[in-house]
Image (cartoon, rainbow, N blue to C red; front, side, top):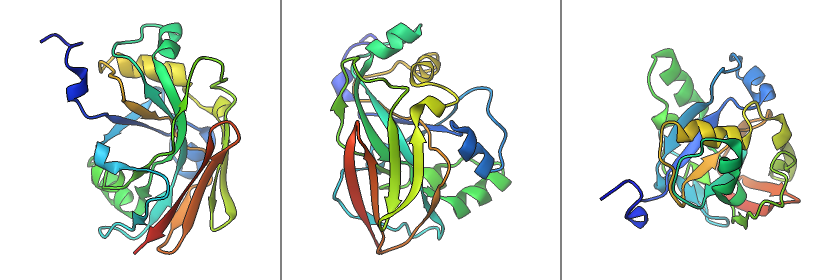
Length: 215
């Protein structure tokens, strides 16, 4: 079997990009990265709109990070920005839920982030809007609201690494496959979630998606 065969046998991968907006880098008191910061979540992290999100039991400081998410539509590697755009078949919003207290402890020990970032239900995902090239991927405005109060606002033009560059960078390491998703990073304003909260992510271009957090 060659690398392009039997693509349907694989579960989609959820690639996530950290520190991709200057404002978020500043609030984390981190340095601006020279290359994209990449980590991966399993498919069990995905939560469709309207399904309850259970507060994870292995941490206390659960925080929201709203992100634009793109979906890959064909297998391959993008060697140029033009090829990168041709691989996209859908765009939506999602949440990279993070246990910040757990992440801080792991960072202090020099350990990987999976316990803080890749737990079940840590990647709520909206419904994908088909992408045909007409949507300006540098001009998507989006926001995150908790219990009716705006917590985050962003525009994709403020990314440190643009969507096409992210696809090229990921392609240098992985053969991308249909269904793979890329969470492209969060703007500033990340904050806590508690059981009983209702979280909404919204974009005039992409839609409105909501979840309730339960104990």
